[in-house]
View 1 (spheres, helix red, strand yellow):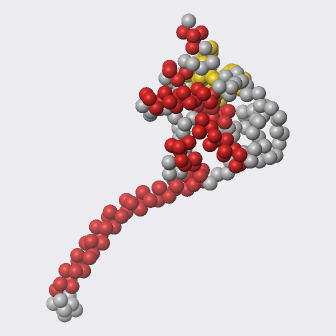
View 2 (cartoon, one colour):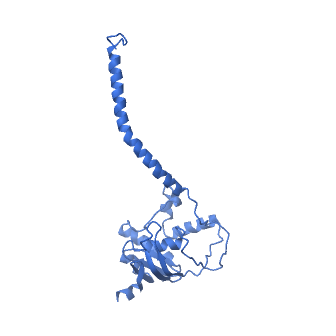
View 3 (cartoon, rainbow, N blue to C red):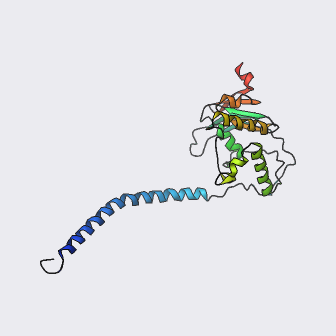
Length: 239
């Protein structure tokens, strides 16, 4: 092209060649990322469907029967349960459990035996058509949203956590799990003492692996293979 006079400066040819090389190299690097972005977009679509899903339970609804008194006893009868994603693997196999009213019951056992599943079913984290619930009621059923928030804050003050929560970036919108799993011994004693105090006169369920956390419970239920194999106080279970 330079010899035919189509290009006046040889540097222009070098510039074009360099631009082509850089473009080709960039496309080589971009191609795998496009594939990754495509896969991520598909995964994000599923994630956003879950995030945007509306709960089948409206906790603020005033429709339905509101019992005048809540006794607090919790009982399960022959509960057979498997998650929809693993229908052939039963997590709970004929579970019969009685949690006395206004007492502290500890669920103990190895990981993956269904302790959290029991709490999830009681709290209705997920709605299952084949699980029947019988409710006795709650004294705060008619409380307004603001009154319920005030109750939560009052409970946190009793547990010595209100000031700590107020210093968090999301304050009471913060989600936490395993309240005593990563605490130093001194902090764990403070939290455990607060939990012991506010559990008095309330139906309380504890899931823990530490002996110090469960040995003071009024009732200890030992799980194995999706069933309750032993139940009683700490002293009764060790004798």
